[in-house]
Length: 261
Image (tube, rainbow, N blue to C red; front, top):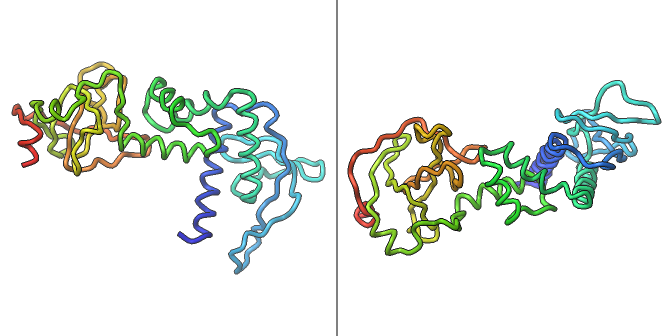
């Protein structure tokens, strides 16, 4: 990735995170703050040119548009976060982090953001925020880490049913297909550290009314219907899981050892 692409990715993450702050409820005294904007005049140069002291940022809206005062006069046309320099965006974010810490808002904001961006429950979001949320990281970076952790281990449940390899390989799993993928199913929870290489484990969430299997997710605490093992990786969508379009229990039972042969 080129330096310019890295800068663009950073800007996108900053803008997304700042917009999330607005939707979660910004802290007091976050704004105003002096900002500089990008010179949008057409040029062949790829260097980010700035207009120094462009104005005072007074308010940010959920759309990313902003109220800015220049020379003590409110601008007729709203600015956008995308028009501000990277350095200004970093300043805005750092001011948020400082105020959120001092006003004890970061925890509620983190839980709110995870729930908005994934289909996790409040309990699941709160558990992750307590264990792994990094206050100084952008919201978007924490979200990616939340998804990565879910895909890897994320199985240290207090009520994990299978805790040893003997239990895992002795279990009689039900054979089934989910979204046309052959899998093994058990209603039990499995410690992910036991899973063999090249096998993927996911939790299944059932619908709120309990009449169907609803989603495939890295980890489920509420409405947990069971665990599936697959030779194929299910690629999680942006919200952190995969919707179950169809599934079929085949009526057979098989051990993991037999299934891997």
